[in-house]
Image 1 (tube, rainbow, N blue to C red):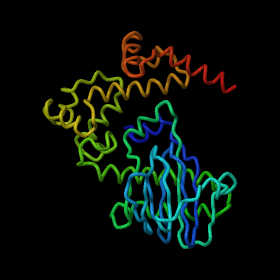
Image 2: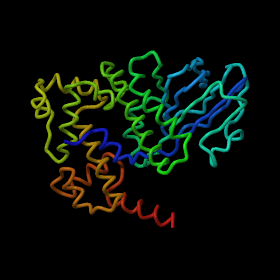
Image 3: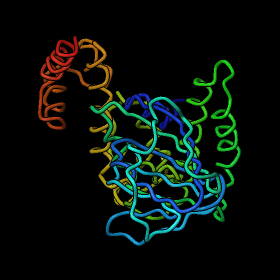
Image 4: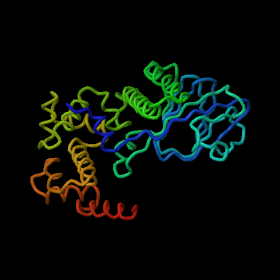
Amino acid sequence: MLDILTEIFSVVDLKSSRCTRLEAGGDWSFRLPQIDIIKLVTVLSGGCWMLQTDKAPVWLSVGDTFLLCHSPSYALASDPMLPPLESDSMFNWKHSNISHYNGCETVLLAASFELDTANAGLLIDALPSFFLIGTRHHLAQSLKKTIEMLSQELQTSEFGVNLIRQYLAKILLIQFLRAYSTHHSNRFNQAGWLGALGNPKIATALQLIHNQIDYKWTVAGLANAIGMSRSAFSAHFKSCVGMPPLQYLLRWRMQVARKKLIEGERVATVSETVGYASESAFGYAFRKVFNQSPTGQIKNKNKLRSDEN
């Protein structure tokens, strides 16, 4: 049986781009640039303020971990009244994963992730621009051991260190997403498919869709498979995921199809893989979702590769 999150990570081509450690003491305030990726930050010691435009300052203490996703620029500071210095001009992250400023009273650990821009929305759209799991929350305990291991690996130069950091960063993200899903499992339409994974009935329906992507699913068929009435299932699915069941099925099929086309698979093969008996029907569905034909997607891919070369 396929795991939904594993599939989605594969389609969006999620990669751990880097892990960093910032140590600071005394009075300090740093502005960090806009986040066009997913980033996790945790406080290992001390504490600081998280400052975002048009939002109230948030105090972060030891064990607090927050996620940023396509977030505007923000600041971290020992005092929210201090004018922030630009972090890019203060630290040389290109040549070191660890930076220091005036002491080590506060230590922050960060893990950043990159996504394939073509399908990034599949994960990005399910995440908030900012979400905090406080140290007192019971979900924070599931993150603690991984954070400690990642912190240790950032301070060693033994062989295989980069690979271990990448794996630990991914594990940390998955644990955070589990916690986020659990937190939102009963808050309808707030976390899309990710929040719905915490709802047993809807999670089962999603599992069926992902495991049998080529099956001719109907709303009635899915409802019957999980033991709900058609009307109740349809309403419950939409309230949890944010869209009707067959719209989700269509979007997932086309996301998978686009990934396969970009990787070089033939249109006819992809069409059959995602459940279409004819290329014309597949082409219509593809255009409906992406406003271009499958062959247009292939041409764009080839043009990008040509430009890169």
